[in-house]
Length: 128
Image (tube, rainbow, N blue to C red; front, side):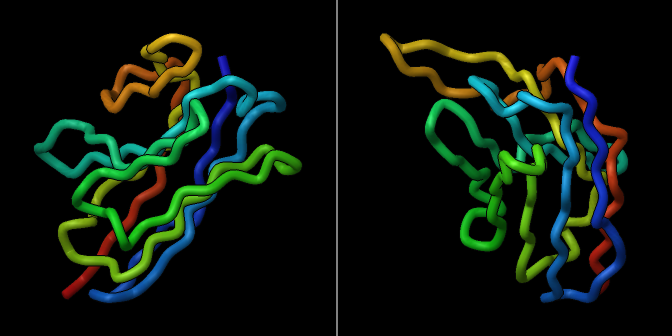
């Protein structure tokens, strides 16, 4: 039920950087799984990075290049993308209220596109 709106996408050259923002409804980050997904034409939506359950995780394809963070005061989720590659070209989506997998008192967040709330997407294009 969260309201999400991405921004910050655009066109950059190979090796460039972009910072995506996702404005979310208040209290979205409380006990919540949030993340970034992307989808390129002809491909399934894939998980990129997530934050929740006290952990931050990344897909192997972006680890070391992307950084996910959040600003609770502004209720905004960010994705800093550095060293962008042409294969990063995709529509990027912010997602919230993802499924939680509990293990005792802790939980990890889903890495599948089964989140409850989604933004409209912001296009990222990387040219070689």
